Image (cartoon, rainbow, N blue to C red):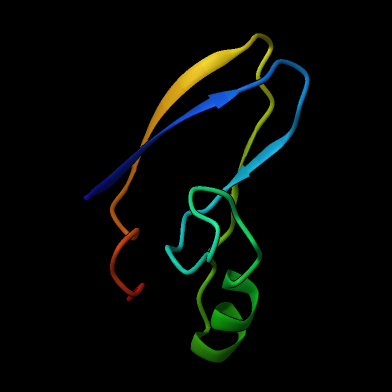
Length: 68
């Protein structure tokens, strides 16, 4: 499972990739939309709205391998 550390800033909206197809991991670039359409899946990004500056350790099982 791939792990990425990021720092998020208070008051900013972040979209985190959950499908593993993004070319800008860990952030979503909407690659899931075409994949969902072709494969009848429901991948969506995870939205984060931090109240304060925070360091996050992200682990997503789909990163580093194609979604099923």
